[in-house]
Length: 245
Image (tube, rainbow, N blue to C red; front, side, top):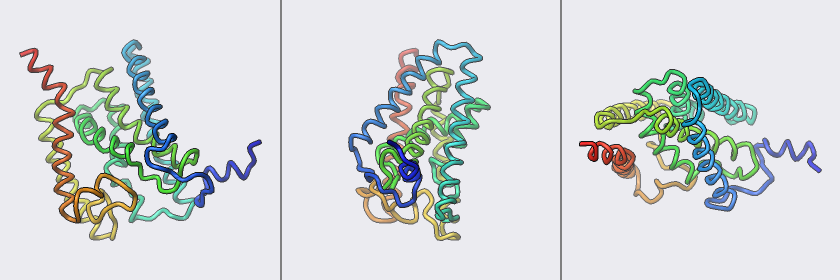
């Protein structure tokens, strides 16, 4: 029988359940659910009326924003909301609101950023999530996978259902805007003593950055990886254009 203490523990700062373990059965199950959700979303969207597709876009946008708001409320209630850690300046935090805006406005410039930066960053976050000790079924476990999973879903939905696509010039836009944003955040980190974008130091939880060398050289490695990932994400469109030509 589920007690009030059990329910409280699902939201507790000092969680007493099983800790999160990278690539554990619950981690792999969460990834499988996200994959199946996206397959179903595309299947439904491609067969839906314009009105239903609009409702799907708005629903995903609202869930993204509410989920992010719940994360901020939880941190505030737990006494750990600070400007050094909780401003929406990390790439995935920005992509949450960018995804919502893109789904509602159908803005193609935002789509370009979301397709490349959103998919790349959110996928890495899904593979090595920053959830601390909070394993299944804690609130943070669900919140993190829902947030990053829906960022990927938003980009996939607009591509495969709404027929949006990036172009070669999109890569240039993303490279310029991404690097300008990083320079701005570097200044923010200096002013606040924060580590947004993880460019001031490595994150505390295991991630890809751990194998990319010391600071600041891992930043250059991340830039190189980002270029490769963006080219891979563009590859299907490059092949399609080549075949048409």
